[in-house]
Length: 202
Image (cartoon, rainbow, N blue to C red; front, side, top):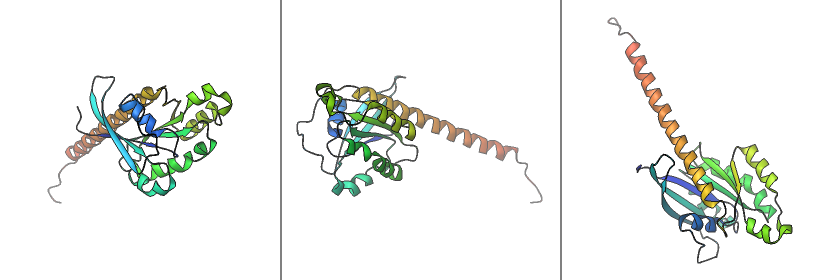
């Protein structure tokens, strides 16, 4: 197992289902307390990658209320991945995505991997008229901002594991690519030093 933690933040407006998403992935169940998250909560999970490797992931559940925004944004620091969540039955939560994304980019790693989640498909299945944000609108936003995208139901567990697995794999691949590039740069620097002739008169 690698000794480096992979930090993921789950962000979005209050009530979009962030805590449900976290609990479904980490514990396979719904939270026992359905009240809004106050400040910050986090959980850890050991993840087995497609190549058989294992890593430790920290997943931070952030409060969506405006009064906690300063605290929430501060905890974006060091995040290599993020789930940007909105409620497909509440248009306002979709409209606020841009601000959440800007806050994340300001504080998180510059190469943070982002996954856009349109949550609560179970509500739409029960009441089709409750949908306020179409899947196409979510896809267009994701394409425009270069995000991965999926619609989910945290209540039923639909697509939750798949989204996390895809996000973590991309974080892992990106980190390995960065390490390879750094090693290549070091090798190039060493070669230049070797190739540069020493001047006895300098």
